[in-house]
Length: 269
Image (tube, rainbow, N blue to C red; front, side, top):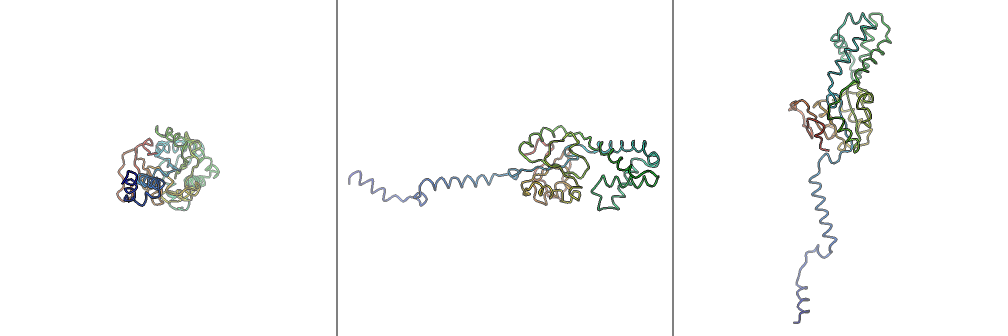
């Protein structure tokens, strides 16, 4: 047997795997599929995010100092414009009266400024003051309610995220974001009045999904309150990040957030 016959004979005896018979395209396809499966295995929930909603109070700024100051300024306004109300009440008694009215009118309790105005109208009428003063008083309160002081980590993170994601603010409160130091950072802003319900009702998160035309898994919600923020967002299938600035303990009865952090710098985005 000459050399050429020997080579031909050896070729006939080699049994190639079936996939080899269709050449390099099949091999390349298998490699691509293996790569896809590896990619799927390493994907994070955060990889699909295109919308980020942020709670405001105690998430992006401390709230209590602002509310205390706004109530103090409102009381000063009452002293100047409705002195008899100021003589008969304190900030604490006014707060109690407003809460009683909210409990008696649950259909409007989510609208804090409307509740505040109705409670002042009631008090003013009892002392013979014109009810229209209540609207002016609420506007005065709101001016001071908008004077918030964002945490140091907030502005740099929002500036970075706004380049890549649609940012939405959501709040039960009355802060008008466009009149705060964070004006211009958010593409959309919704409050409890817009949604018709206050958190933990899911209405405000449903509104975010509707207005941004997003699937739930494409929305990340960032908030400080396990009950009002994380739980309803989890229930709707949103990705969640709990910002725990003060070392709180997570409630055992609630499903945990997808991510926990002390500052916004720790967002995995």
